[in-house]
Amino acid sequence: MKTHPYAGAKIAFATMHGKEHLSRQPFLDTLGAHVIAPAGLDTDQFGTFSGEIARTLSPRAAARVKARLGIQLVGTPYGLASEGSFSSGLGFLVEHREVLMFLDQAHGLELVEGTIATSPLPPGRAVTAVDDALAYTTAIGHPEQGVVIRGGPAGELIYKDLDSPGELSAALDRMLRLAAGHPVTISPDYRAHRCPSRAEIIITLAHRMALRLATPCPHCHTPGFGQVDIERGLDCSDCGQSTRMIAADILGCGLCTHTVRTPRANQIAAPQWCDYCNP
Ligand SMILES: [Zn+2]
Ligand SMILES: [Zn+2]
Image 1: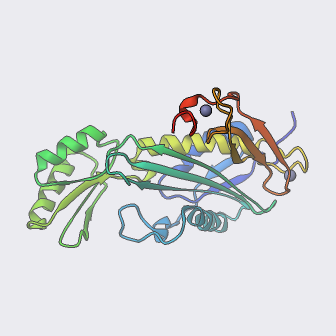
Image 2: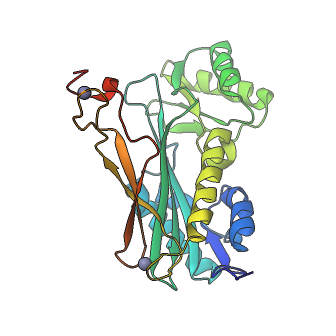
Image 3: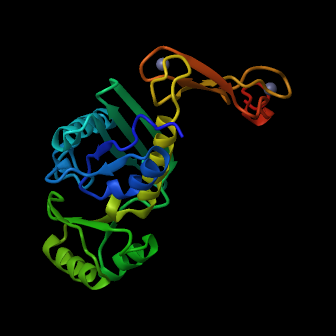
């Protein structure tokens, strides 16, 4: 068997929320590489979900800075970092975007696998009574799914890491009393170790990244050949005009300019996606 370029390599996953556990198996099984988390890393300095520290970088830039820091701390050329963002633009649905970045400073590679999905978790809400809040936390699956309680005149009081229903009730009770009429909000904790649905997405991205790294560029043989773009424009089955439906994936190399166009299995779009047939 041909050994893979990353066989036996140490890969630093810049996380303090257990993401190394989510990626360890795919990287070991597919590449024979060992994913570890650097000790003494503070990723909160780049921003937190609960807002104690504002996020100023784009998700991709934040992932890059974290991955570089992990590389430095572990003393390996290889680093991973992921960055999630959650937004509830329309109020009812929360959109979860996650990027997983792999840096290989030996080959000069920066590869990204990303996903956009609707989070199964509802957005946060204001609560005025403990029972009110407990109905919400039960619905989202506490204690496996963590919650964040926020209150105070400027929302400056934040409770998280409430591991049992008892701790949660006590914290809610305390927050509602301290809030003295100011709103108290409760929302999901999106940190990977407190959010099983996000952890699942990071596992999926880790699988995709490991498979990508196992794929060499057909032209220059650099590892990590994979999707870099999509091509829209499937033809409508009724009128033949091109639609916004995806026609092909564009695979590319992280180092050279070689690309391969892979048409999608479905090569015709239903008229429901056509601006002409279904305006
Ligand atoms: Zn049409
Ligand atoms: Zn190449």
